[in-house]
Image 1 (tube, rainbow, N blue to C red):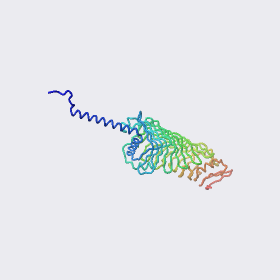
Image 2: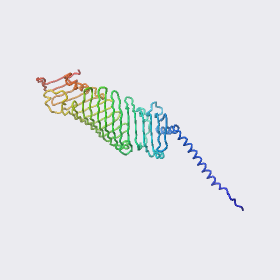
Image 3: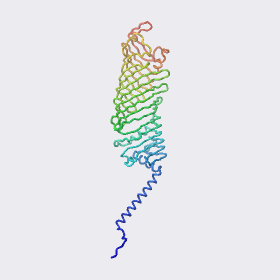
Image 4: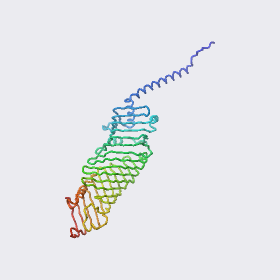
Length: 425
């Protein structure tokens, strides 16, 4: 028999070679198609937004999409809007969204939640739309906080609610790790006409993941805050610290330590004071509650020194009840007649108020010194204006109520068993 010098390869080997060639060709074709798809940011980006929206139960759109894959992948979205299907209002809008994240985050498909940097320009959060979306979300697994190696920046942000808003929001967060100390600077202006409240605060959170998991974590904030109305303003330096626990729609800091150094300015009236509060601080139903609260007031001039206990609630309105004592009668107040002026006794008081944040609604005050008692109603702006007049107006303060004293000396005359009715006028 003769041997063929060029024998044909066995059929199984040939089939393997053909299969390998087909696989290589398919991979090459897939790579070419994928590369072509990736080189079309609009198409690829909208597909990614579609996947993200499906995962969140949202419709997410963008006016333009661009990204970079060389080096550290970057995604830039402009004119972004996210809304719940069937809802007319977008829960979030942004003029620009920038995200930079390392390749390992993409390779692990989110198991490694490391993001290099996030930037938001002119984001607008609609609170009612957000609440409607949150109400539809099923209970899920533990929420994870991403690692931000180069931090977060927000500029010209706004939060809109039905009757209030916060504008001019700026946030600078240098870095974020779920279980490490977080430091951030937050600026913005709360508006609930006629009240406005610009703030510039530095905030620290000991353990962000514990806070998100509903466990207590130490939180501290310090900075400048101004409360203002059309006719007055209160610029202040504030400090707040304590262990904070977040609930689904609530927050609790127990105990909370709040310190305020401020001045009340209205026309020619300037009243300096320092205020300290120590209490459990709870938030729910858009109201902050300090119950029970211990209050220490250190005043200069028109503001007295006082200590009291009671309750304080701050929301769209102010509710206040305090029982305490004034350390003494301030020198800037009109002098008391003898024998009250000779007494050095403290002045026990009870104060109740329910009304506007400006303290412009009627308040009730019960004040004692020895056997002399005052039970009155007043409006704080009117009393401050009377004090600022320095006796040039009415000799009696703008109070309504009763004053009783066993003895009063006026212009050399001694009056005993005094009962005075104070009118509204």
